[in-house]
Length: 343
Figure 1 (spheres, rainbow, N blue to C red):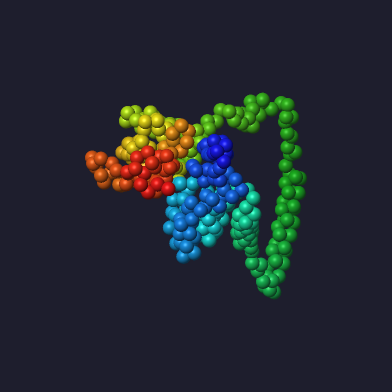
Figure 2 (tube, rainbow, N blue to C red):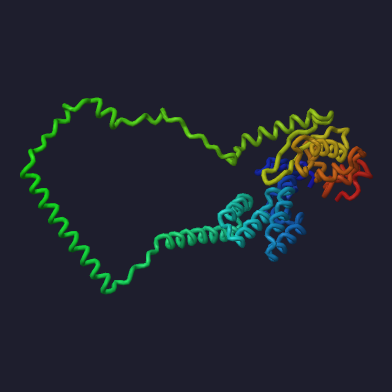
């Protein structure tokens, strides 16, 4: 068992290091073994139950908010991703439901139930498209009564008389007018051909600018923005050199702070210092997740809210600011006062 504990497993989704006996990634919730998905679900079972109950009551906004709360802790929890797809299906938003089902299948490719739900969404989209086309092309034929037939016959007769008169007029014009002689094409000035038919080359037309301010942000821009935030935050406090990575959540105002503690650091203390600095920095989010590592091993994970940090003002912070805290046994026993409530 000791040999398995020493072995490190790298998560295929977030590249975090996990112990050899870990069933799921402690940072993103992705399964690391056959039973890993169920093990990850067990950690968030109360929230999953709550989200399902909200869905059954048709309180879809609350159900989606609860699912997002789970994904902030475990972004790759496939059960939660599939549940978001179910909520969107009940709201008839099949296109976005497929996106969530796809994410769930990326994490858990063998889930045939999710794959069947995805296929049902595609069929619903196709049926809606066919119905829309039918509505656009449907033409109600006019009843073919006696008046209808008489009108058609009158039109045919009028067209025939008009054609006959037009032909007679052309014949008389041909007898009285001189024949029209066309000049050969080669005698026409070359400038007429070039100026009338030559189109401007495509490369001379300036490309149109897209004025939309909601253009999607590429992953490279996200990384650059997070690097800028981390650099600014690191320069605000002496302990800023412990901040190894900052990741902003694209789904809402939330940051995840990856902290590399030194051997002499207390995990709760260093997490509080850097978390408070982040929540007081310019453009701060409403909440942060602090993840403190020591020697490459995750020691502590906790949530912090900006409203609670603002409420204490200049008072010394306490471990009560660390919500839903998880600590290793070593981190919990290092300081008895800070380790209370640790698993």
